[in-house]
Length: 94
Image (cartoon, rainbow, N blue to C red):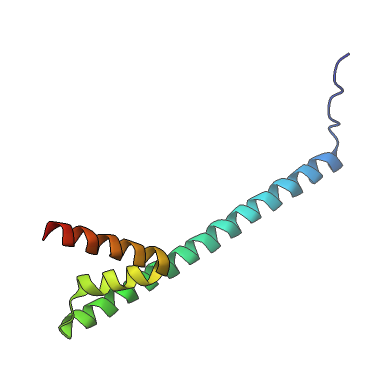
């Protein structure tokens, strides 16, 4: 038993072309939106860098500020446990 071939009439070709056109449009929209979001992220990163530069010009330690920001993102219990361990290790070395 062999498979029947697809019909090759004008309606079928138009239908397929509409499907291809729709897929092309979806891809174009996706790429445009993704690139726009990527540009927004780059702008925000640049703004963050500028904020750090301002704080540095005011005399703040930017390494400490970055650490502060990183710690604020972490879970409080996890951070407290890590700090406790660091203190224990420091006591053991002294």
